[in-house]
Image (cartoon, rainbow, N blue to C red; front, side, top):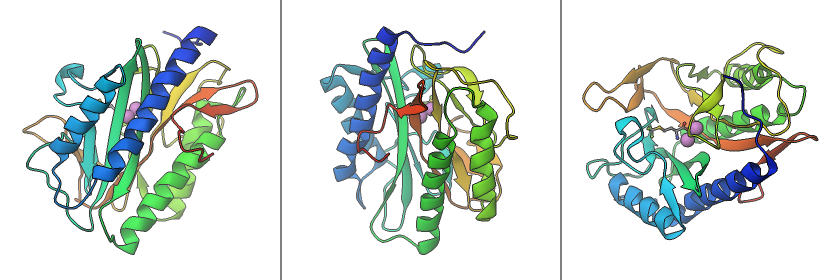
Length: 255
Ligand code: MF3
Ligand code: CO
Ligand code: CO
């Protein structure tokens, strides 16, 4: 199976879906507060997507039960929204949403701080965001996928953090997870060559302590750090253009 080169029509559809995914993360921000449970946030996300004509891609995906992944503190990813997970002052959380709009997928996640957080937590989030940005800067025709992981891992490790290697970015657009697998640790110039029309995510997960992941035995999804130290993640959906890149989930004009 090769990496799909999307047609202009497909790109237009994926762009629309990606924009809605980014707008969903903007919409939910006002509700992310101390005292709120993550199932409440998930319900709001579900309704927002449905109101805008989209389906949450995670709902029923390989049996996943919710419309988003909400991952606090030591949860690396795939945190299942629950009435029993209540946000409190000082928490950092990742909210990850994937929309299906007119059959096209858009995938993005970002961090939210609950009230005042520690300087350690803030630095971890800032570094993780910068890792995503450095990865994105490696995207363009003739670059290789390995350059993304090289840029990310070099920076994260220089800051004294570890990079999760058990979960990766991925091709996206016509399906939730397409080829290629986008590693967040890699060697310079390794991997396949990028071409205009490819669309994939970059979604580094960066840990304060060890890189290793442990999956919750009861729910089979929640991925936590092995040492229960903090983890952060940011994700965008990116199109390779003839000039370089276009960040389809960047609804805030960050780039
Ligand atoms: N949105 C996640 C990603 O970035 C995947 C979540 S799959 C789920 O690839 F089943 F856990 F929802
Ligand atoms: Co993804
Ligand atoms: Co995602």
